[in-house]
Length: 87
Length: 155
Image 1: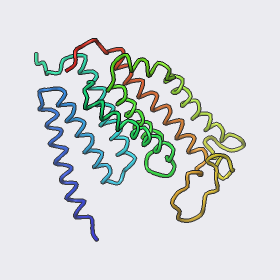
Image 2: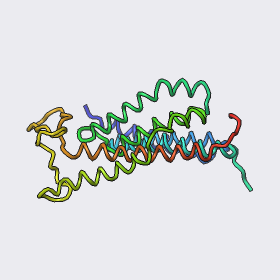
Image 3: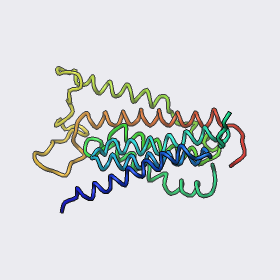
């Protein structure tokens, strides 16, 4: 069975998901929502790495990008305010 | 960030994430991933344990954990394992492989499913790198939580 067409369609979907989640991370006014959108971006990016046959990079991206940076951002936002302030 | 949802999720998921990180570190020479990836997964499990609890519990839990010595042991152990190759050979020479020591079993020839008791110094280096990475990343999250943690109300 030829999987190339399936993987092509999957890569189009992954690209769309990356664009949508990145736009959401920029557009959200609530900072916690923006951080969660960043985590979703990292998770979809790790799926893309796995499709491109780099499972090492996929594991590192999922561990560091989706979990640890999210925890750090949440801890930083917890000590300030969670609303965007525009001077 | 200590709601019931996060606490219940942590109680179920934290042990699984820690075991998976240890698996990735130990099987670094056989499967995808290695010291850095396994250490990052292990540290994310510990970050989950840090984030989901109150200040006092985290302080009590991580008081006895020697994170800074663990990081130093990781770096020095990696260098020491590399210097082990200088016994008549070159730097980073794999002297433990096929020697009968732990992780030094005889490597079978041909296609095989991969045996844990092979690999020589690679397994030791993976363990040391994983130790260093998990100590470093966990201490970053811990400092974020403890030093910057003000006494604010829950949101």
